[in-house]
Each structure stands twice: as C-alpha cells, then as structure tokens.
Image (cartoon, rainbow, N blue to C red):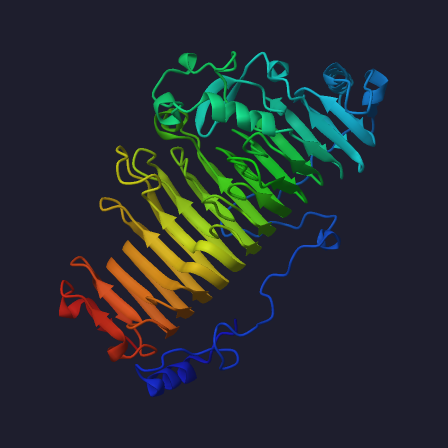
Length: 531
C-alpha cells in the first residue's frame, strides 16, 4: 500500500467529514478493489541456493548449514529392501551408526518405498532422502518402544519415540526432495479411542517420573521429527505428510534451519507445521504449509512444567512463508499457547496466508505466565481468513484458568494487507495484565468487523485503511493510544470509545469529531486532538 502525502491526506479527510471517511491512498477506490499482490506465492524456482544473511531488529547470528564429510552410506548396503513390505528399522539404525562412527557423512535413502520404525539420528549424520524416495513409517506402536524422554504439548514425558528422534546431537540434517509419510491415521484413532480423560494441565503438576506413557492403551501420540537438546540442525527440501501430531518439533535446540520444507497435515489433529519449542537461533524460510493446526507456532512449555524448565524460545526468524488452508482454530504465525518459558525476539516477514483460520496470533492464558515480547512482523498478505487476521488472546481456553498471567509487550506489525476476514484485528488483554506496547503501521484491512482493542496500554495505529461491514474500530479500556492517518469506512460509528479506564487517546484530523462515539463511562478529557 502506498503511503499518502500526509498533508493531502489530512486535508481530504477533513473535507469528506463524518459521512464518508474512507480513502484508498493508492488509487482513490475502495479496499475491495483488486491490487497487485503484496506477497507473491512461493514457487520452487524462487528458492535460492544460498541462505541470505539475517537482518533482524535484535542481535542474532547468521545461520549456516552444518557441513558433513564426503562419505556415503546407502541403506541398501545395510540390508534395506524397498517395496513397503519389509521393515527396514535395523538397516536405518546400522547405516546411521556406521556414518556416525566413521566421523560423519550422508546416509542415503535411494528412490523407492522404504518401510521402517523410528529412525534415531546421531551427531554428524545427514539423512538424505532422494527425490522419488518415500520413507513410510510403521503402523505398529510397539516399534516405537522403548519410551524416550520427550516433550508433548509443553509437558515433558516418557513416551513412544518420535518417528525421527535426534537426542543430544551436534551437526545433523534431514535433506533431499523425497517424502516422509508418518502413517498418522493409526495414531489419531488410537488417541481418540483411549484418551478422553487425558489432561496435560494435570500432567504438568506431577513429577516427571509419574508421566510415563507408551504401555498398551496408555500412550500419547509422538511428534514426527524431533531434534532434542541438539545443536546445528538442518531440515531442508523434504515433504512431510500424515504426521501423528506436531510435525517438525525441535526442543531445547540451538541453531536450527528449516528450509524449503513442505508440510501436508490437513487431516491430522494437532497437525502443526514447524514448532520451535524452547529453542534459540532458529530460521524457517521458503516453506509451504497445509496443516491441520498452526503453520508456525512458537512454544516454550506449559504451566508448572514449563516454568520448571524455564527455557525461552528466542531469536527466531520466519521469512518467505506460504501457508494455505490452515485449519482448526489455528494461524499462520503463532506465539503460544504454551508460553511458560517465555518467547522473545521474533522476526517474521514476506508471508502469504490464504484461507487460514487466523493469520497472526498470540495466545496464552492464566497459569502459563511469563513474557512474550519483542515481536517484529512485516510484509504479510492474508486472504479469506476465517476468524481474526491479527489476534492477541489472553483467555485461550476461557476465563476459568488460574495462576500467573502472561504478558504480551512490544509488538510491532507493519505493511500488512488483509483481503477478507471475519475480523481484522482483535487485541484482548487480561484485567490484571494488559497488552503493553502494540504498534500497527501501514495496513489495509477488509473484513466483516474491523478493529477491537480491549485492555491495551501503549497502542499506536498509523497509516491504516479499514473497511468493515459492521463495527469499524472500537477501543475498550485502552490508554496511551495514538491514531494517525486513518481511513475508515462502514458501520454506524467508525470509532467507538468505551471503558472507564480509557485515557490519553490521541486522534488526528483524519477522523472527524462526528465520527467518534464516546461511551457514557468515558471522561470528556480522555480524547486529545492532535495535528
């Protein structure tokens, strides 16, 4: 969206008056008119070979791929047989061990269909899945025993092994243009039939020694690919489908690159795409997502167990992302809802979200506590969002939760276009812990409902164009607010201001006095006109 000449914008807006407040800064039309794409769909040829430097608004090292010796270990040399009938678990294990013991190299999965149980990686091993190769994981739960130390939805447990598990490794990779098929349907059915009463909230309160699963009907679905307490991790080029639950799930890792990865998990319950979980220095780029839950959710542990570990997710960059048909209450880029270790320093840019349930979402609740801060998001295009395009929800599972309150602060979003959503922006802070410092700049929103901000301190919205069929803009108990260079249309009253705690609301002349409706509980001096 072109930034207007601000002097001309104010003059035109004042001339229009309260009856017609909408302006399109670039061509004088409405927000619903066709515009050139802000972010173009990703194509394979758009993925550069080199990893570009990271220019984040916080200190973060440039990440480089781990390197491996030029040694090849073909799984067929260790007894692997293609065809999808013979389990090749032992062959994979032996090839990985030989590669590791030789000092590192590439374990090659050639073209064909290869059935296996879990694959456990070791340091200095690159599992390379050749184009035309499919690793198909076993549907026998017993293959995923003995149990391993893992984290499931924010809680540490002993459970079935992830399909690919890399514990305490240094320099590992999963690369190639092949496919990993998690055969997840049997896990979905198993969990649905056996765990109606399972509660991770209660699990988080128990000692780790009592959280032991993976026996008979007592087991949880594993993650698909889980590096655990590992360093220098690369996942590049592969396609992952039919995950048991979370797909690419690094836990307690440092220096992680997830690049040019395709995740297809539309049928998977909790089928998240890439879940950095209490990780540091993470780059996710040029990835495609069609997921049964959040595309890129950033996590840091749940409630008591997350606070016990106390490890944040920090220094995370997601760029050049294409997410489509992201389902079940989910979003394109998400912080939470497991935030008990804290999340900080996140930079997201050049993303396209199409037919996602939500777009940009921050979610947590009482009990999870800690701080989610220093978020920088720019150059995002969203189309046909089912719920909120931009959302902060401090009441994730309702108002009944108790315990330490989460704090969202220093959130910066700019250069965003929303073409169709149930709601453009919804920010909801807790009564005892308001959202602190939310800045939105240069945005175009076309939605059924426009903007709702409740319990926000330090709200700035500038150069914004909002077209809504119902309420355009509502402030409810917000303080230290700056609204400048707005173009609003739709609804009975473009700006409604409510709440007895509302104060220091600065509005410039782009919005006329007649266009602002004050609630009966708002003091007359709550609004300040600025030039």
